[in-house]
Image (cartoon, rainbow, N blue to C red; front, top):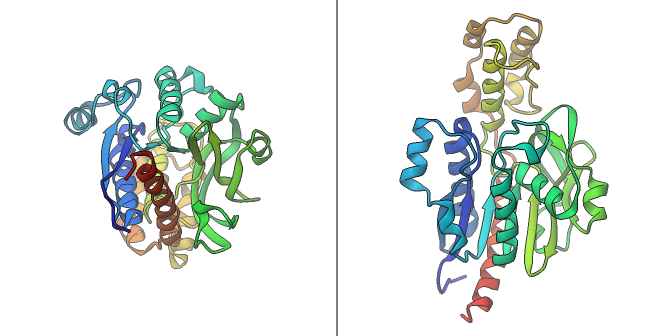
Length: 311
């Protein structure tokens, strides 16, 4: 498909410093893989209420546009990432006011918006009055998913795929469907992953899973959480993600995890985790499905952009 002009995309990255650059790369790579011959003009932003250290603050100053510039633009599509929850309620987060404005503005301005993880939960709270609930334990891992056919987002996807999840909170599927969303991808084990509905002229795509993750993302999160736990920076024990290593390495990481949760609170224990070796061997079984999902989204948005601009 030949493009007559680029598809304009506003990318709002609200992840904390430790995951900011990884998240930026993940989404940019996935958009590139899914877009094919469709050119995308990407502009990056972040919410000012997300605390930044010096390194990421300098990166933001160099490569991201001020959020105020976004309000004067009219991008075809918008992507808003999740963020690390710091408070018990979303409305108590320091960036909540800006996030609400972003959600209201993007759905009134753009033709299609992807909201990832916490941003998806924020939309359900702001637009539908449905609050997230805290899970008994972190849901993390690669899970089997069932795909609903006959929707443009799931075109050419098989009836069963796998996708990663990594979250502390949930909104039950019944509540999501009860306010008009169509759940396109999900399972009993991990709940819904992708849900869709129209809000005015805008298509809202809520993604509770993480199709953008790289092969080693779950393993990297586990290493981060474990380091924090062993240093005494967090009280709750880390959760070992399902399928975060190759099958041949499952016994090794299970043994390591057993030492972590047994009470051996010694930061030096991290030396027993051969992270780089494990990361080099782990598979990426959701990449093809993730690329197709985003490719379908981009293709549909591009076609609507051509109609919108009379191309």
